[in-house]
Length: 612
Picture (cartoon, helix red, strand yellow):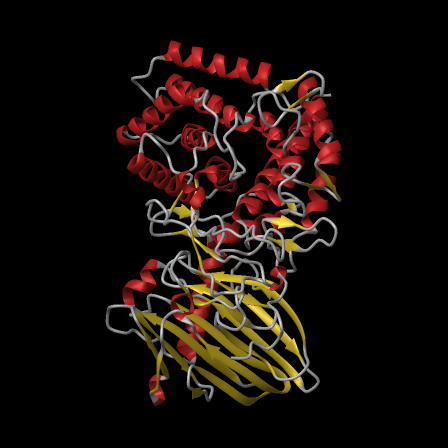
């Protein structure tokens, strides 16, 4: 089946829609090129972003030449794409319907649905649409039936798809096509529903589709309206919050890293990983972002998920888990797929799951410790989990590990890992002192905390280089050293942090506000890391620089989103091209936390001016 171009679009050309259980990537050309149903990590139904010939897609666009503009409807995750051709203007609105629970109780609605509404707003437009699902990573055979008013039924092992539409689709072997004229004032509808092992609920078209769209607009605008941030960067912060909400698996509270797999960190290379899982590494910063914006329900649900999941594998924690809190599957390659722009292998699963990363223990405890800051309680079961994690840290903090960046090389004593072990013990002490955690040996914890701190200050500091280093006894820096200030191990304006900041800017500065995560000798050509660049802005806001410097850095970074305000994992510092899985939750978390820290700095300086 012909995709329509010789290669997949640039990564930044994609937008995302979702329903807090699954997500789809839709290109600027109106092509739905990635969808996994029923869950984020389910096998794909459409996968053209990773193989334009075999992956499958659902494109709705004008025939011939056209120009495109797009946006999200204000305060929502509903994608609007406008096509301008010589003959007319076509507007395409895409969403996965979401409803208030009261509305759901009163109606039969599909478990999974994508709603695509077309409207010709000027002239007339010749439509060129193709529906080409390729279930189970394109390994499942499909059986097609066109059933008049019921639409097109596509059966495959383990499920079925129903495409209902008032457009005239023609089934042709393994796909369907629609070539028709849409005239000014006409409004057309497409509803795609997935059926597993239950009676089908098909969504009505016409006014009831408009009602579903209106309900979805109301749901998203109500949710985004709860955002408490009111600073100068509200638009970017709200969009980041909305992106993060799309990565939230509502049934469990989990938050995945990204909805995609194997979008490359270097186009044409092999740094392609499956990010459709929940990384403990992201935990405390994500909780900080959610609490800071006023989304307490989501923050508490994520903490509950963290403690439930980690309890299942104690004493050893996995690096990542599925949305249901289970260990992820073993990594395998889809060798029959070409990969995004010939970047292969395409990976399913992630073998980093079993690495020893000591930082994740501190992340979980630091996330849970924020319950105290917001006057929340910790139940007995959660307290038991936290004590168990603390015990593991006490016994293993001095071990080498893989570290935050998950290199597939020998273990080492990573400074960031030791920092997070220090954070773990320090937060346990704070919880104990607040009366939220009992049955701990306070004096022993203080002794361990002091030992870890002494080890970091002695072994991670390189006197000759006048800097903290990425590993004990090392010579090179990495961006995670900026977190020494974030977690209050060192004041941001201390001499050691200022010298470390200078070394970072000398050695891993990518220019134009961007940072590399480290100097990569094994994989040259990797992009600058989005989250690391926002760490830089936050470090300056914490006191490592002036407020003006911090805001300037932050504003520079905003230019690396796409036109929809979405950020990738990495950025090519030469071209500004988006790299890696998309959209990347960790980058959006970094943006939110940097904006919150800037707001705190702004208030602090205003208060100081009033006193003066």
